[in-house]
Length: 99
Image 1 (cartoon, rainbow, N blue to C red):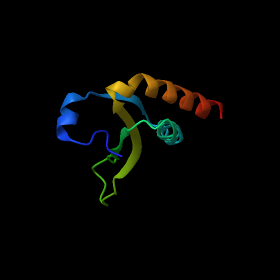
Image 2 (cartoon, rainbow, N blue to C red):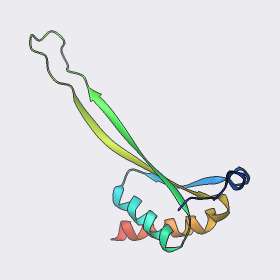
Image 3 (tube, rainbow, N blue to C red):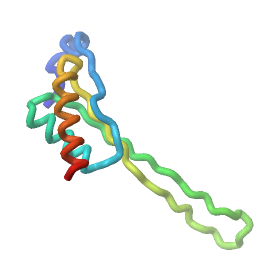
């Protein structure tokens, strides 16, 4: 569900980040809590890729570079929903931690 319907409405709204982290189960709990509270949201997953360069360049054989990956998630809501969303996010995070 989009946060707003029209561009004019979008121009009048602010968007606030209510959660950011790398824990996928926590991210899923946050999304679920906001959806249950019927709070429109926008989320993004950032994939961070790091390349490990071989320690020596003098070797005769070419070695493949090994990459490591991790994700960082971000959840945003309309500014008008931010307080209610923060409460839902806090409950979701606590439930995930106690779990």
